[in-house]
Every structure is written in C-alpha cells, then in structure tokens.
Amino acid sequence: MRLRLFLLFALTLPVLAQQTGLPFLEIGTSAAEMATGSAGVADISGAHASYWNPAGLAAGSNDASLTYDSWIGGVELVTVAARFGIGSGGLGLSVTSSSAGGIEARNAAGPPSGEFDATYLSVSAAYALQVGPVRAGASVKYLSEQLFLESATGVGFDAGFQADVLNDRLLVGASVQHLGEMEELGLEASALPTTIRAGVTLRPFDIITEDDFVEYGESEPKQEAVLRTTVRFDVSHQTEAERTRLHAGLEGELFDMIALRAGYITNHDTRSATFGLGFAIDAFGFDFAYLPFDAGFSSAQVLTLRYGW
Image (cartoon, rainbow, N blue to C red; front, side):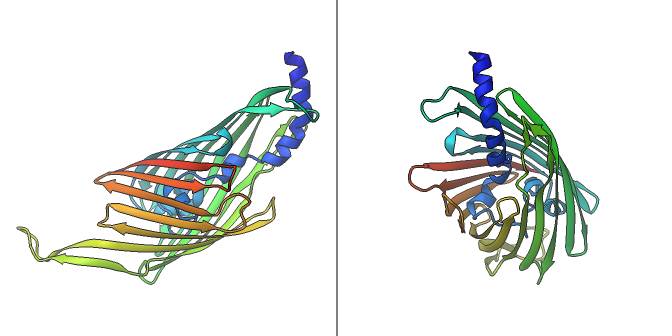
C-alpha cells in the first residue's frame, strides 16, 4: 500500500511542484502589515523587515517577535524573528515554518488514493545600513520543502532600500523578494515566487496635546499623541505568475497604545479587504489581523507578539 501510494503521488508531484512554488513565501510574517493590505515596504522596521524589506532593519529599536498564521486550507505558519542594532545598521534573524496536512493524492478522477503532508522551512539572515536618510539592506535564506517522501532545498535572496523625505512625513521604498533556486523535487524544481515591491508611506497629521504640568527637572511640558495617522500605498509584481497588485493601508494610533488598521488588495483571486488592531504597553506589543476570503474559503487570522528593548 505504501509503495502504491508513493507511485500515485509521484505522478502528481511535478504538477504540485509547478503550482505551489513555495506558496508559504507569499503569505507574510507580521499581523500589522497584513492588516494594512500587505503594504508598508517604505516604512517597515524592526524584526519583520527581514521579510518585507531588509532595509528596514537599519531603523527602529531592537525587538523580537513571534507570529502565528492560521491560513485557509489548514495551512499554518509560525515565524520567530529578531532585530539587533549594530552601529548605524541592524542585523535580522528569522525562521518561518509552514505545514499543511491531509493533502489528497490522486492519479485519476474519483476518490483520493491517500493523503500526505507538505512542510516548508525558511531560515534567513539579513543586514541593513543607514547613510543619512537612506537605508539599504539584503538577506540570504535557506529554504526547504518536503512533499510526502520527496524533499528539496534551495537558497533565496532579498534586497531593498528606504528613504525618508520631508522630515519623515513621506517615506519611499522598494524591495525584491525571493530570488533564488530550488533543487528538483521529484522531476521538477519549484519556482520561487519572486516579487518586486515599491511603495510610499504618508504620515499626514498627528494630534498632539501638551501637558501643562512640568515635572521636577524638566524644562518643557510633555507632549502626548492623541492620534497618529499613517497611509500606505504599495504596488507588487510577481514575476512567475506575471501578476501585479495594488496595496493600500490606513492606520490610526491612539495615545501611542492602540492601533486600528484596515487595507485593500487588488487583483487577488479570493480576497481583498483586510482588518486588524494592535496594542502596545511599555516594551510589549500585540497585533492581530483578520483577513476575510470569498464565500467558501472562510477567513485567515494572524497574531503577532512583540517585545522591544
């Protein structure tokens, strides 16, 4: 039975390898960005910049995060990422593991002949450097995929830049993701979902209040942000699928603690709107994204826990 199942699977393996193309690389690794339409290539910073744009590792403070994606079709992703400041730059380390079980094996129409699991792994290291208002970074990652009894490994590369304009009120950035190659999986190698991103981030206005009370030793009143606003616009192009998408996101942060987010993605087969929220207190943060799919596909949820120092 095991040999028969393997032979049936071997017949479907080239088709699966061609269709999947390491699909977990397309999902995303942070709830905040996914809640705003997967936009933010121009201003992403901290640990998750390793995925979206490694240039962002040169900005922000040190942090570590844990993200869990509950995707449709029983697919699950877990990402552990960290950012460490080094001089005028930053080092990023990230590990993403993905799995999907109960995939049906077929060689003809009718009932499935068995089931198998698909598992994927990405381990990346990235570095970024800031020179004036410009940041540039690159990453290298080890990739692994396993479908039933077959497995393959490969190497991927990312690179990107960011620039601050108008006193950080306008930011621009671009990145290229998932360059590289995989070994053959069965009879054919999986193609990486190479993606080119470019975008702008606007911070149109903040509402700031001044506290008239001056504590001992302070010369000026404290300022507290009642509302900070951020608008993001990205365009992405996946070279393998020859598909271009527009991403738009809006974020409002209240009292530097609570963030409300929404976004929209065009030219997607099964989803468009995105929603989320975030909460931060001292060094700890929590982000959640809710991604509704079209009827029959349910929804996906993404949770990120953050700690900064």
